[in-house]
Length: 539
Ligand code: IMP
Ligand code: MG
Image (cartoon, rainbow, N blue to C red; front, side, top):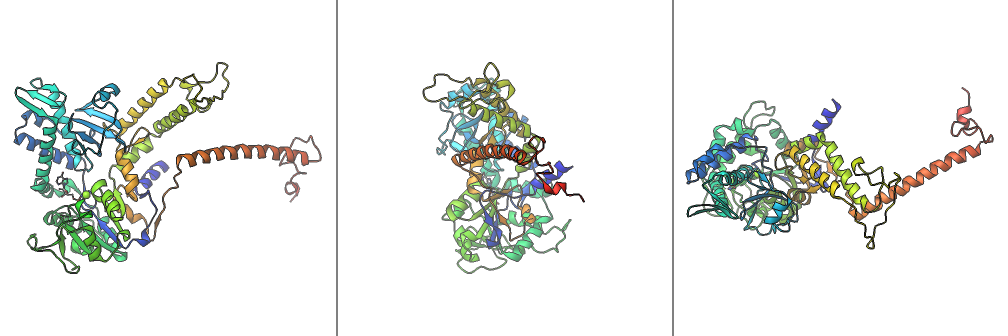
């Protein structure tokens, strides 16, 4: 019962990378899709996948593709697609490859080496490597794997390094990537996906009665704006559904726009955080844009289209550092607003619900991995029978603990192969607990590119923006004290010394106390009545 409460508690928390005082925030900005409007998973991704797959078939791809349906256990957000070889890659922040799949096949070390001799990619090569950063990209990620799987398994196509050949037709991975990307843009830009979403809002969008409560409370203490890449008509329909539908709502019904001081649609983030685009007014009766650039003051209840983050600051009369922007897109919402404008940032990570479940339920695996890492490091310094897992014990033959002092003159090379393969096994086992492509944030003890960006650019993060409800607006989100490796080494050495010192002091205190007793061989210490007058006082 207690464990269940603890789990519940953790899902309601906001996590902190950099200290942030809510009291100093004068303005809260919100993204819409996957931030205020959270789509139901996997229903929404399945819809995206089916529309995407059908679009490919409609432009000439084989009908057999219709046999594939979305498998939510396969894709993880943040993977990189190699458009040259058709591989999906999980990488760390430096471009080192952590996981590599071709279709649904996991490539082993030597196979990965054949494609990437350094097990490394130049991720700046954005022409070749495409980062599948958003939750919208999940259906697309799965489709890339399906395409490679299909052409690989279909005998009429010959498998080549850069694609598949059938007669004089060459289906390069590059051209398939382009087709999928175009299909994805088509789905979004023509409104096909939006139309299907609006037809069945209950199926695809989570409506939470706490959202109007949160926005109401924020508006009492600060300015609030909405900045979304979606168009006005879609924004209007979604926000109406989220804020104006009465079911289960405690607060009185009011127009959705009154929750905001400023609403900007068609923002074209990340461009919005740089030069931006022309700011126009939207005619909210027709949804059409007014001609010309809007140059006036902020008009309440008006909806704007385009613009830039600078214009938002001007209209609301706030500075970048006074804004907390809440979004789900690590690049378009968080990295750019932080790097370009110095805004405070809150990243919404819906996957954290699952990540936290696995973390809590599989603690033993993480502990084993931690111990293996420590043991591996200690093999080169000292062998301590207490810290080594039994199966890898390297104590001396007579079983005693041996101090090793390996240095550059040492010829001996500890055999670490057994530990390394165990680390690989545990890492793979851990990955599978999250899904077929593993965790969003880690691969064994290595952080993914996504995790590194989250740590660097998101000041705070949580599973949902609604978790702001659990903190007063005067709250100080305090970042945990993180030591650099050299500081941590000093700290652990100091701890060891303190432990040794306190053990020594404890021993000498006992001896001293025994000695203070007149009767040297009474055999007692603290409890000896002569050492401890209080205990001898009869009441
Ligand atoms: P936001 O998250 O509220 O800024 O809005 C995201 C918008 O981007 C939605 O209107 C999506 O339809 C759109 N979108 C997401 N992914 C793509 C894409 O790959 N191509 C074109 N539009 C996209
Ligand atoms: Mg979004």
